Every structure is written in C-alpha cells, then in structure tokens.
Image 1 (tube, rainbow, N blue to C red):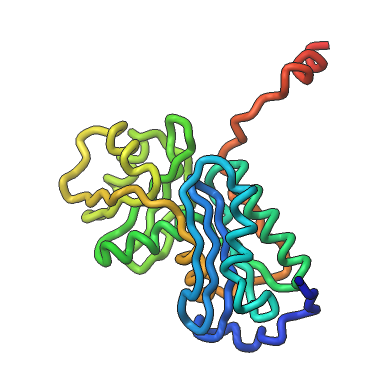
Image 2 (image 1 turned 180 degrees about the vertical axis):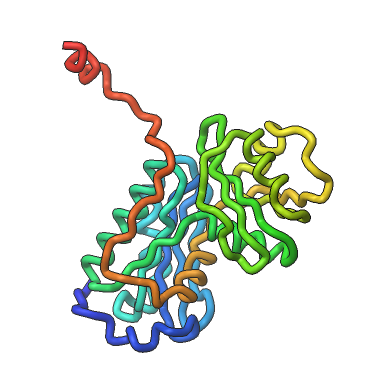
Length: 246
C-alpha cells in the first residue's frame, strides 16, 4: 500500500549516495527495467529486452524490486527521460509521476545518454564517449561526453555522416556506445581505427539508480519532463483522416 508523505523525512540524508534510497525505472528504449539503490549499493534489479509490452512489464518490475523494502523506505524516484521511443518514454514518465503523487516523494529525470555514458565508462575508463541511440529511422540520437563524464553538447538528431563529422571533430581516442552502434557502423564509412566501438547496450535502471543517488540534491516535486527531439511517427486513424478531409 502506498502511503502519501508530505515530505521525505530522510531528505536531510540525501546529500550522499550512501544514504539515499532510490527507485529507478526506464522504458525509453528497446528494454524495460526497474532497480532499487539502497545503502550505497544496487540491491534489486529487473531488466528485460523488449520492443513492445513496456506498459504491462514495468509496474510488476517496480513491485518486485521494492518488495522487501517497501515504498516507505524510499527517498527518491528516478526515471529515464529519453530521448527514445515515444510510447515507452510516456509509460515510464507516467509511472514515475503516479508513484511520486502517491508517495509524496521527490522525482528526478535523467537523460538516457547519461546512462549509456556511465555504462560505457565501466568498460572503457579512458577516452571520450560518443553515444548513438536508436530513433528507429535513418538518423540517430547523438551526444558526446568528456573523460570526466561531462556532456560536451546537448543531444541531437543526426545522420550517420553528420555523426561521423561530429565525432571526428572530437579528440581521439573515442569510445562509441549505445543501442545503435551496429547500425551506425554499417551506415557510416571510413571510421578511424582509433575509435572503439562497443557492443550495443540497452539502458539499465540499475545504472540509472546509481546516477540518481549521486544527483539526489537535484530532485524536486516537479514531474520530470520528456526529452523529445523528434515528433512521434504516428498518423491519424482512417476515420480521423476522413474527417480532416471534410
């Protein structure tokens, strides 16, 4: 049972990752996951790759990771805000907002390229990181991070050629990470040998929970906003099209 809390009694303890208990959820890409960070460590995680079905999978994952700790133990709800799949992103944000309203907990949105950057850094500690994520179109969501994890630009939508041009302007060596690495490599040409292309990786709420604990001081009761870089690839149903013509 969710019990509303006027304010978290533990907010004073949210200054360090060790003392912050974070529920994290993500469904922005071709995976769905939830995780719990407690006492400076990841204590529960559920993750599954999927292109569809996020709506049915996400809340059972949340219930699983919270079980044994209870919603009353939480300090913060953290959610991936994209860019990513329009439907999955809306599902995760709606779930986070609903939980925030029901519990009175502060919320924090973190961009998905930040998650991929942290995952890549664990595999390759040296060099800048270029994140390429799926748009499910011909282009890519792209962002570059410095050695210390600082974003050097804002996420952008670029073609393969534009992405190569941007990355070439970045100091080598460069680590390429994200869920669109293979398609990017197949679409581009003449990639510098100094670049390291990691195997495709999907966002993980376990990493998101860790980032949330580190950034807990940024949390607020204002619902996180989605990071939309493109309009959804949708069109009105046939009946609506007919009415529009009329």
